[in-house]
Amino acid sequence: NAGVMQNPRHLVRRRGQEARLRCSPMKGHSHVYWYRQLPEEGLKFMVYLQKENIIDESGMPKERFSAEFPKEGPSILRIQQVVRGDSAAYFCASSPRLDTNTEAFFGQGTRLTVV
Amino acid sequence: AQSVTQPDIHITVSEGASLELRCNYSYGATPYLFWYVQSPGQGLQLLLKYFSGDTLVQGIKGFEAEFKRSQSSFNLRKPSVHWSDAAEYFCAVGARDSSYKLIFGSGTRLLVRP
Image 1 (cartoon, each protein chain N blue to C red):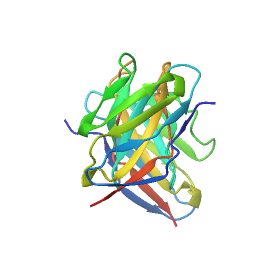
Image 2: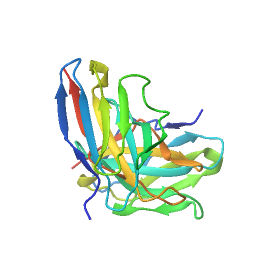
Image 3: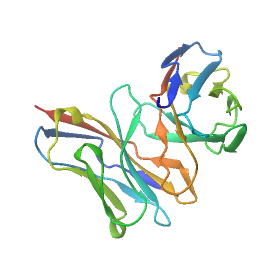
Image 4: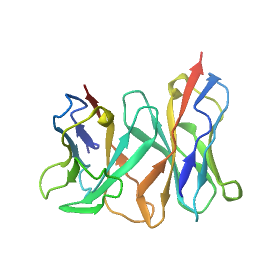
């Protein structure tokens, strides 16, 4: 059973371009979470999705950021018109359900560099 | 506001020595508590978690942590550190009604002297 797969592992974008980050959850997991880790900081929650639904996006910046988790295929975190401040590691986690004692498994992250 | 504090940014210990990493949290009720480890360029691996019950929690790789409600702490310990333990360690809390939304501390980087 493969773990949470994120790609690409490293992504370089020029200011103003779009960044698309992909996350394939573990098999059987229908809950996906995205976190952002700025340099020298801990992870910050961004968004929680189930298949075809955004459940909680309270951590998402109001502009330029969007996320989806379609019925088929990976979850996508999309950043439009990237700026230098978007440079960070973006981590995806997944879990099979949401209840007590459920652990979320993290992927290895996508490191975005905006030049 | 909910928060997690890891007061030590860096800690250096000698191989074979004992280790304690501190974590304090601010939360209105008893939260879920986690410790994760992140090796350079890697994702996060769960070391251990506390949901309820026994306040001394055993984890992987010989780590343990103790939940002390009176001190709002969840310190991580290991009796004998190995060179492979060098990594960054994150403490996190989750609300019982939204346990997916973890709040992470800023991390403690562990260096191990040979």
